Length: 170
Image (tube, rainbow, N blue to C red):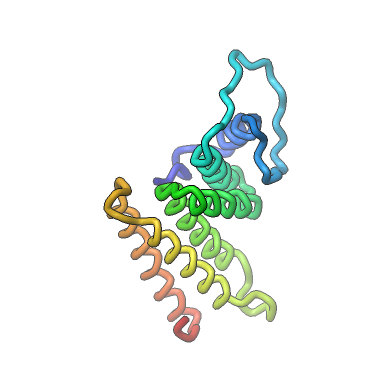
């Protein structure tokens, strides 16, 4: 499920450029600019809603890999929305799981005691995304058992983090 460890930043940027060049254009903006090159082929147009959802999911993941985690959120949110609208279970499951991980990553990179950032909010959002991911899971989704075990593992890590941060039960 995770391509994070298999793709370096340069490859991620190249893939982002290629996938942003597909038509119709993505509705989400990216700071990673597409540099026009002479293509050896004309890429096919995305015609099915699940293709749009999949592209947004991959763009969200790749923006994290490319070092732009804040830009990944709109792509992942779009992917989750499209997956829900068009019953793309696997994409919806993955998009919500990635959104939960993004919330937890932000918790790691923001000071807890700055008076503004509320760790309970990040934990609540992450938990909501994990529940949404589980709602897409089912017997008809291949590998759902593996994903469910990952979600449960993240929830256990969140419980430990809550305890460490001395947060009240959410």
